[in-house]
Image (tube, rainbow, N blue to C red; front, side):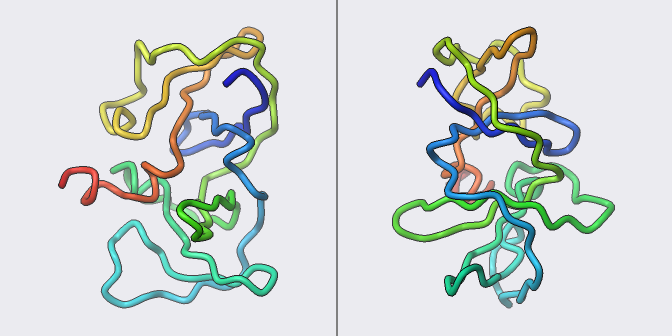
Amino acid sequence: MAGLYLIVDIDGERIAVTASDVESVVELDTLTPVPGSAPHILGLSALRSRVLSVIDCRTAIGLPPAKEPRREAMVVNIGGHPYALLVDRVEDVVESAGEPAPATTLPSPNWAEVSRGMIEVGENIFLLVDPAAIIEGPSRRAA
């Protein structure tokens, strides 16, 4: 899995997502709530004639909600369904020459269920996360 990674910020943690898992990075305009949905599903949004389910990464990981509204998201396609994963900030795409290593330390226990390991880029080490595990949310992972 050496290659390109998208670096994003979630709750002050700089994390990595395999770039090939990400279709695009967008700023969401309109969000339509879906009554009765799981707490980590914020609603639906339209992007280029497609309807995206919008997932709050913070809530999905079990972290406190953001104090300020957020609009930046990474779009992923899991099981043929498009999702917008709302993050605090999108940073950059970086290249890592090495393979992911097992995660030896986590920012908090909440990250364990979504972690794929760690990657090293220069002097930085990033937690590598699985977008599909974030989409599942805490209630489905617990079941």
